[in-house]
Image (cartoon, rainbow, N blue to C red; front, top):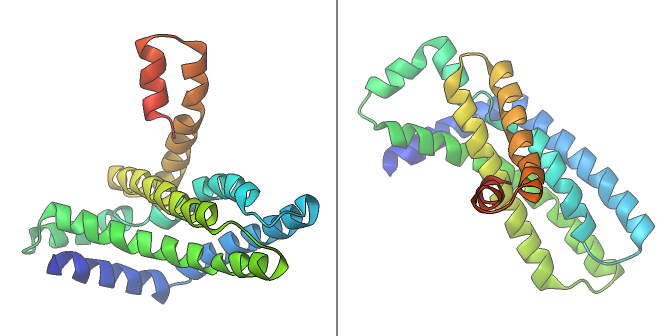
Length: 195
């Protein structure tokens, strides 16, 4: 587990040493802030339910950007072979890089916690659904990061990894429509793999 923490720490440092994490978090927060203001203004309800629906779509676009460089950059620069021949296991490398991406996602979601404080000032939100909504967004974003990490391992190019992740995520998102148009075991299969 020590190797996982070391790799995650190194990956987090590389995220925040470059503008990647800052730009992605800023774009995510800008979009969420705009949507929060519009939804709050239009619905006049002390809930984040409608924001969570929109957050799913934004996470589907932001998560591939967070995960596109995880293994693709290592593979392109040739440091992946060095990393894999060092005294660490493959799963430790993957888990360490995944943990770093999940930590960046958690930071982005934590900043949106300000919306809960605003709702507490303006009204009386139900805290149970609000907290479970955040848990759901965290788990959904984590699943999207796993898909992004998978596509990052397929290629040396970060842009190709991000584009492939977006296509795969969109496919898994709309496959639910196939479940509605089929029946029996195929319908159950499509519902099972749908996001």
